[in-house]
Length: 466
Image 1 (cartoon, rainbow, N blue to C red):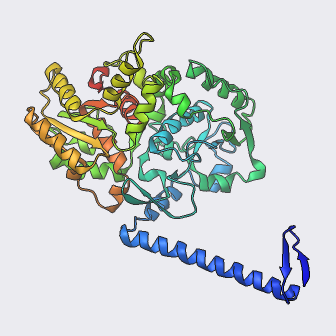
Image 2 (image 1 turned 180 degrees about the vertical axis):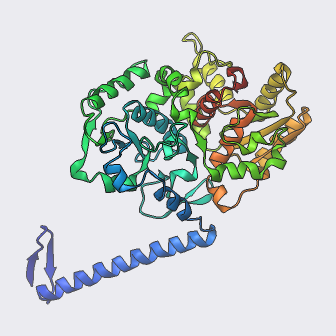
Image 3 (image 1 turned 90 degrees about the vertical axis):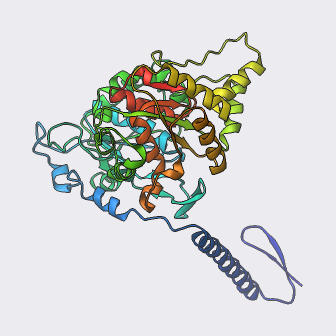
């Protein structure tokens, strides 16, 4: 009986077989396993597509992005509007929220800061797809529906961060470009890479971090293709936006093109306008204009996270966590008071009511807000929630019993297949327009809604927390 040692060090016994026949047999087994794996994967994908409706591809939105006026290679390499004429300069972020699979609102938080940073550095920002997951599989099951793993950014937002206008004139020099165009105009060997090593990421003042980056970018101001690498030292991440650092940046963001020229995408705005009969605005401009400064009178929008957020809220209570970033603004009502003298049990109960309120907590809070309203009588409630339909139906019954004229649930909003894929942005666009918004102080969704409302000039008092 021959004894064979495989090149990788594994021992095999050849029972009346030649090495050649053994190798053929091994290759045959490997091939069968590969075919079996591919077959199972294909079956799973087919079953998923059978159970869930195949989502849209958004190829029309991708085509729109490719045809943005700043995506002209000749002009990018020699822009005569620059003084002196020359190459446009770009800023690309790598290793950010789009790679660690943050949610849409984690991405928006980072985008506002990095777009602002690029504008301050006199560079055009480089935007990329929103990534649900970095898996090679084209679809992902999320929140009881099938979603494409990558969605073009302009399906969600428009404006300075997504290639839109950054000024009131027609200049395109500073407009953001897509990653696809950046790869064309800035090949790998032409890029200068800056890491976050030594960045003051644990301070109290976010502007110190911004100024640190601006100083580093000043050192490479003549380089057209600059990449900030956040891969090994995350900068604008959960820890940053969970701290007080964004509070010092917000006054600057508020007046920058990042927010003054921010808009939800035409797709999102079309969904809001489509549901005007449900939202019942007294002025149609409140639902059709991207720059509407007046809210939908009498409407209170409330943000209620359910599902697995219960466990997250327990964790926040156990760590005595504060509200996220901007939600800690001193001018916002409904502060979260945490005293070291409070017992652990008291803190857990307090956090549960603020973070995961039950129906009686919600009814009580909205009754208080309605009583305190000194402007337009508050009559209707719009619910942003991932809660189960039965729970939402029960909430609606209790709110109507408490005197609310109408309660609008997600099921009441009519969306086509594309609008449904960006439904979280549709919810946010409606909440941004409500006369009063009641958010979750521990949520990035609520923090972003409040940021956009304040940037539009809505009062601090119109933003509340449970």
